[in-house]
Length: 351
Ligand SMILES: C[S@+](CC[C@H](N)C(=O)[O-])C[C@H]1O[C@@H](n2cnc3c(N)ncnc32)[C@H](O)[C@@H]1O
Image (cartoon, rainbow, N blue to C red; front, side, top):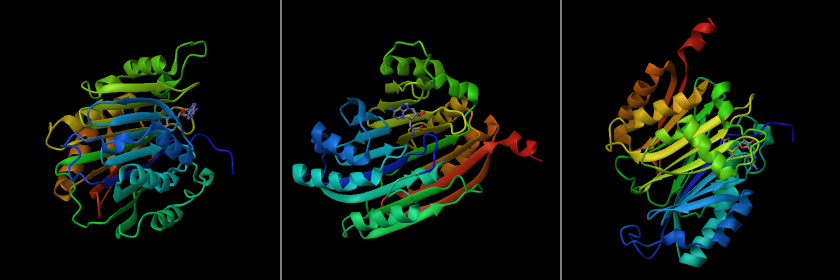
């Protein structure tokens, strides 16, 4: 395997289950949250990462991992991992524990990721999207028969959006007005990225140093309502999970020069507050000033056009220009809008 830096681009897996109770959230059932910590550790062992910290509210549990984050709701699990983790290897133990401990059955799967900076360093089954898709096809139960895999392109080959979804029910209920926004940023402003390095003489814990970074960088202002669980790695690197009612948000930063990367992800409701997405996008850009940024929003198809206009409208006044926009439909998750942005001045500079 060739030498490479840390791979910031995450792999993201979302699994939905159902059990005997048709409405566990409304009936205040814990569902998957009842899985013992030992089972979670075994699942993460298959992925090759560990838990750094954990918090919970009345809706879900949020774990900061050595490589990104895990969110556990009563009927869904979201795992996002970076580096050379083998995320897809979590599927078999997850299905096993959900089934044997809770009598839960898998109903849908979605897997998304950007384009790795160091693709040749990825281990099986992540050596290519073809291999990932064939692993998924062979691992998930055959009743999840409505499936689709696609690479959504951009103008730059280094930023594509890889999507695989599968469901047992083509009319799978996609929560109306809910969106998931996944932002990937590379070539961070070096001065801003420097804020995610710890001082060499610092004796603070990862939590208290993370807390300081959250405040110094303005991450705490992205959503002032959110409870934040943050962690600073040594000598550099940062991860946080935010909890605001049933909505999560998460940020991960690889600040090293040459392969700097940051991601922001959140869920929300399109109708909540018209300016919410706009406010978050602007804050995120101000915190990282990326050289390239991709924004992928998953929502139901009626909001396609509204979403891409809103994202472009939020970012263009900050000097970013939309360079590409791709849209596609997927079973289980609905519509995906994938846009890429680079600073407007950059194109002029290269003329
Ligand atoms: C785990 S964090 C955030 C991951 C996230 N996907 C990202 O790259 O934005 C990764 C950063 O922490 C640094 N780091 C330091 N110690 C680490 C450790 N024990 N495990 C993982 N990353 C560590 C890495 O060099 C990198 O800068």
